[in-house]
Image (cartoon, rainbow, N blue to C red):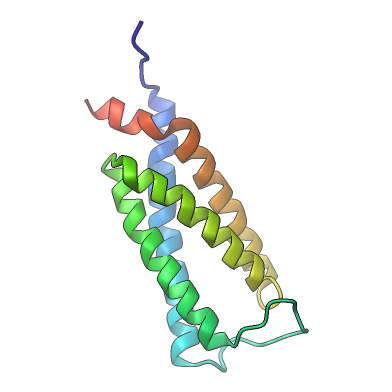
Length: 133
């Protein structure tokens, strides 16, 4: 018996792709701000992993651009994009974790969104491609 794609599951994948695009844009812009004006972000208490804001800016810019590209790939049903999406969402979670001392609420939101994206891509990843056929 052939597995039937679920329209609701395809909706979750659409959600993941769109959220990846939006999160990629947000991360890229926050990275650009840190690169252009390293005094924009306030450096708070000491933390285990210490980079200057410009270094964090480059990290967020690169992650943001890769998440953005993967989001478009997920919407097209590309298997490689789903795999990259899971890996990049995990890397984004780690980067957001290290961003906690500077912007804790923003970092927690990014971690939660990345968790939802990973769940949708791993549980329902095939359903968007199957529903388009």
